[in-house]
Image (tube, rainbow over all chains, first blue to last red; front, top):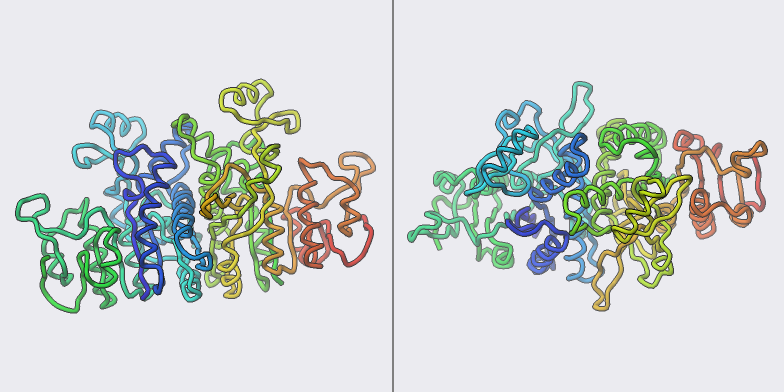
Length: 309
Length: 309
């Protein structure tokens, strides 16, 4: 089975945790233990978020030289190297030496006229108090938005249109390589007036990009890994129920929140509709069960309606 | 012809130039124009240095949080993403859309007992006055060494033993992909007592790593690109002469300086001896002529002695 997994950037650097190299590596190590369970006998592609990491790099650059910030596309490229390295090394340590690995830098085309550029929504970097966030927004020209009871910097999150390194990724999969790619939703790029590709200040939603990747790779299963074991209705209420299986039409009708489960549901539905295959939302700890069709929230067009667990 | 090119880290961010993203990109653009000339009809692998870049990332991290520096292996992974991205995008803009590209994160095994760890020699980051450098050495526990009339931080530069991502790189070349890899000489790693791979604080010489890469890939030509058009005897004197062609034994006997041309000559000689093929040292602007055997300093075992230009 060809499995494409999307790892959350927050799963790699947990909210509230100090943004150290050691903490990131420890979280990657935990993720690798789960990923190693589905590697044997399957083709595995691992994509990942980079929200906290790209925010950290932006802060590091600003602390050193506030007048010459590195643009988000370049910071995104740095995080693909950093996170890809940790995943490749830690997962590699759990699998036989013979298993080939490749971390592939991934550029993704977006539309310069995407409406997202007029309404930044993607949180990056650490959380701040309201007062801190408003001060930074004024000083640095950031857009900020509430995130729970805190605030974060937000940037535009345009839709991914095309993944440039698709052919190399396919060729490597055909050779049995575990491929780590599309980090942070891929590096956002656009063609300029002279048909030259260039980076653009944005962060592509990693779930939408991974769904596009899974679709283009003819994946059998897309797994969107998050910190809960499934999508729930009435989340946090006494009536909460886990969704075991849903048709895209049925789960979309529930109206999940844009800031949390919404983009994951959207990405899963897009993959399920485009391919007729299954997309799953669940915890990484449940990935083995998900791959067997026995865990997470499984979304496919095979059957209408919703089943709860 | 399968050509492996090593680009100098200083060629990507010139000495004395402000370490901005724009300056790096401009230099990459200049390099890409030359690389584009040898891409058609050849298999092309591009390796690159990262000395200035890894030093900059270390300074950025220290400015933001001096108590939790990211280790050099992680910073090296970041630079592979950043520099690889710029090379892939700028070279891609000069070649037909159909040419596939892949930037591959590269881990390299070194020996934890390599004597280099007892005598750090590899300069990274910006140049400092003697007083500044001595202050930083005291504050941060750095090793420092003179570099021209200035000083720089130096770290251990162990020999590369094994390139882990060799098979994916080969497979991609067989599909006509231009591969960017082994950035910064690869990420230095060692096996610990439990046979787990982990990063280590070091920077591998990018010329030696590229020579090993070229050897393992059965390259027809290794090009070590630098800021002079050839290796010279009596450099800077009225008697200076460019070396057009040399046997490894003959050029090694000249005793080039460890800090500048020495490692390039050593890397070229290692490749030439191991393979019987040609290694060239020259400027990127001369790469077209070098590929035709008409420029740079060409080193091979085919003929004894030295010819001057």
